[in-house]
Image (cartoon, rainbow, N blue to C red; front, top):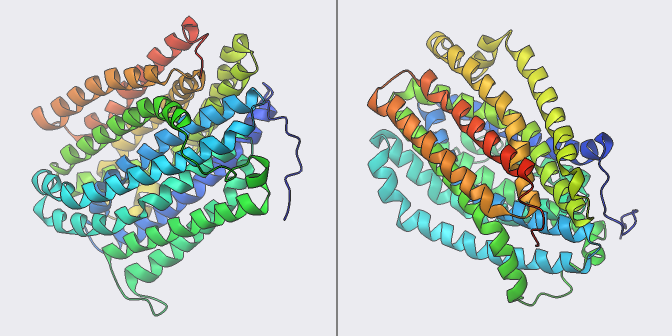
Length: 451
């Protein structure tokens, strides 16, 4: 068995090299599935009008559950990073095991909810022509949830213990299998049945299982299981479960509220017609692409802030955040400026229809501005997670979502303005997030929080 050739010292340094050594592998690991999602959308768009929009509705629904795992992932990541900074490596494996128990329980709940309650809700809020497609798809897709959650927990372990470079291999395994199976099952190639829209669901489930198994093989092969005593004690530990739940539940609620509002946004957009829904799905894809860069730096801020606080370096937290936010903004804005020269080409890649391109360009400009704000805001917001006071994250999200939901309802439903005005809500959203998280970190109220 190959062993990890590093020392047991997991304390991090506050410099650009350390930031990039953590964030770049995370970014690559996130880029590959986003590329896969783009290919998936490209395949579905070839099935005909409306399929891309249906993918947007079902994708956001599944995203609600995936961000529950993401919240648990971030809570676990902050705890593992804090233990690494405190040199308490013996606690890492036990926390990891408790996270597995918790996520498997939640995945069962998600499956039951999708079968018993979701159809009644979807039937009332979306176009009847889209309902049958969405309901059938989701009842297949939801069975990927336990694989996804176990996959996300390994993210927390890798990033929290400064092993983010290992994320790449599991991600590649998942993505390559997903692209192949998408093509095979949607269109019926290589001897596979032609399943159309539902083929994308079966492909995603299979790919999540392959990605999960690949990562757990890598954990075993690299000796991480032995190093962190991951499965040495499989007993249920109420005190650690309580700590994990206490740290993660505000984040779970925060992300769930955010994505539910995102689903509300897409429902309002769907009332403007299929063209508006297809354009908005492209904008979601674009935000997902930039999220690869931005959320990699955001995840880096969570783990590094928690780690240096564990080392007792609270006075250097703001300096660290400024460096991470500067890198995130610099890289993001450089790409955005280049894209301003050929938005029509990007839109035409998804749907080569003049109306789609013409109506999509002004929305594209607004979304670019929102992404620039997101690149800084996400780093400051995730730094609050690193301080250990996750209830503040929930409060920030709650205040922001109230303003966001009122805005999109008035603009898209009450005044029925063009969707360009609806997408301007991203500017409101990220400015609100940035101002409150910036104030909290600068105030120093987080100092002394114990986790």
